[in-house]
Image (cartoon, rainbow, N blue to C red):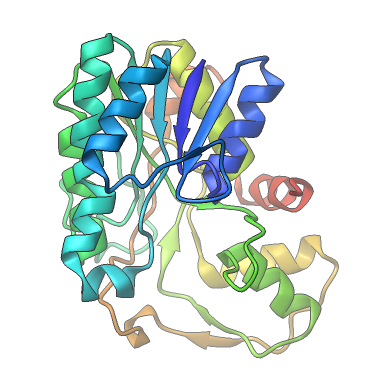
Length: 284
């Protein structure tokens, strides 16, 4: 049995589906609408839940990803994105089980669409990135921890809180005004492919920091154009925008080098077209 924290989120749902497809019993935990109702910020309850359940693996996919909210309340960002990793790492150490901490790619700036491997120096420029990097440090205090740096795209199904993919699909289908960044670069991966890679890496006892992402780097503008192509929509109304227009300062060169992951897994990570196709196919 494994424990998935953040089970109702975009990646959490994909992890639960992947576990089911592999015949693995997965127990989901989240603040609401989950088998176990658990706030990751409640330290005592978090550690007790792991010790009580005695899972074979813990995957922490819970996070506060709203960058403006993190900037407005750094304490909340730390208590959600960083501190739980310390509690979970210690609980997993006591049980001698594996621990996966799902991190971020928001660590690199100023070099366009270049790719960054796991050894590249990081430069967190906002509270979200700082809190996630602190979470990585806490997770890595335990020798059996796997830290996954990624940039996921997919659907979540939360009313009133669309994911980037859900927003883009709705905007394309309804021809809503679109302003797309051409100076913000990522290596997106669909949640199904990310979940598969995580389970495959765990099966190989992978440890340390590993980039799990698409093998290509694309701007937000290029990604949405690829999405429009797959949806058979002629995107002739989008305007070009800059990430510098946003209130919270963001790292903008988030490309990830997935060479290490590909060597460990023995297969290639998906390119942008494959990511888009899989994301569209992967319904809720």
